[in-house]
Image (cartoon, rainbow, N blue to C red; front, side, top):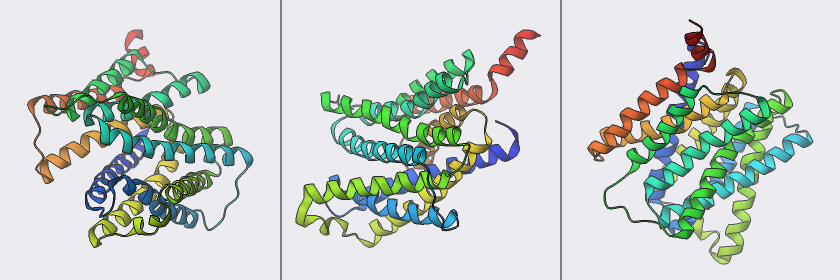
Length: 307
């Protein structure tokens, strides 16, 4: 990571992503209808808001080349499938396993693509630290007495791994392949596409109940709109950061693991959720691992051995 500005931008992204996670959870808690409908309804409403905000951010202009259209369409499918797998996994298995698969995918998939497609290596220390982060994710989210999931749960977890990773990777890939142009168009295509898929699925599966699914309480409406606004800011900040950092793997490591850590700490200190000693050990492991990921780059390790 290069310079104070990069660190501040990534810190701001972490805060926005953390608030996004917390607001989304509060929305789900207050959604008045069928819990299975909360995610597609949210995807439709938030997708429209994110697309409109990004369109304004782009100066009310839209011009996408075929490659951006293709990658944006793929990312829309990845976002929709991610939401679908999240619903299935959250309803059928332990939260700790779900989070481990989801956040690991957000780190591993972009790292693999960066290594093979763009020859962006990680040092041995960074690789070991990322593996430690995976264990920390499980330890932090583990709750005593969790029941094991069924086969459908683990299939959904594999989907979370793949689609959470694909989501960030495709955003990064589009900028690298197109020379960092049409980045706003990529976001618009991603969220409008996911909106369209969600609306079609909701209409086919719910039929006459389609409109009823959008009914909200004052609280659920507030949390949904607030979360959509935060997503809009976070997405546009992400595409800016992707232009100025050299190794996006480090960014995605901090974004996924950092959001997990901050969410847990905020829930403990502000929402009074209890953490076990084991959970606190996981927090310490993650903090130390994130420091090692950012400090012990390939150049840093090579310079140490050169001495």
